[in-house]
Picture 1 (tube, rainbow, N blue to C red):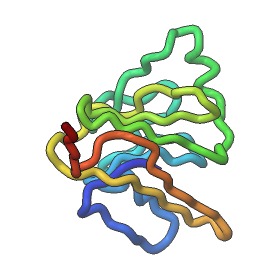
Picture 2: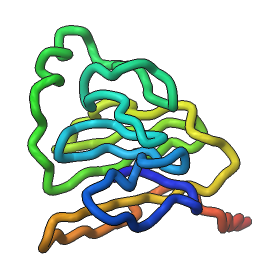
Picture 3: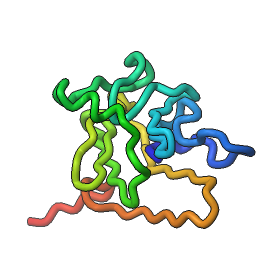
Picture 4: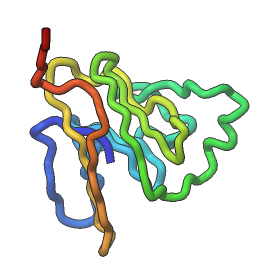
Length: 141
């Protein structure tokens, strides 16, 4: 799950990473806890990540929590995607805890969309917009 630009592929044959599988999307693979962008794994999330290219952000949690963050995170029932388009960052909240910035330096001035992909039979996925600015601004006097 993550975000994508309009031109992100929506289908692929086999078990491929879709969200983060190209340069048009940024994703967190929940089964393996890997961050993906440009078809490359950027490392584990939450936890240490390889390099900081392609928008991966540094680990912002205190060093004492790094060891715990590297352990496997069970697939959560609910995930809150936190996109700050002004700052160009994307992170996630699980069980009420912000896991840190997953991606930074996201493109400005382009439409970004929530994206979810699943190959699991019987999976139920719901998206719900919570709050924030929209393209339609209303000013009242």
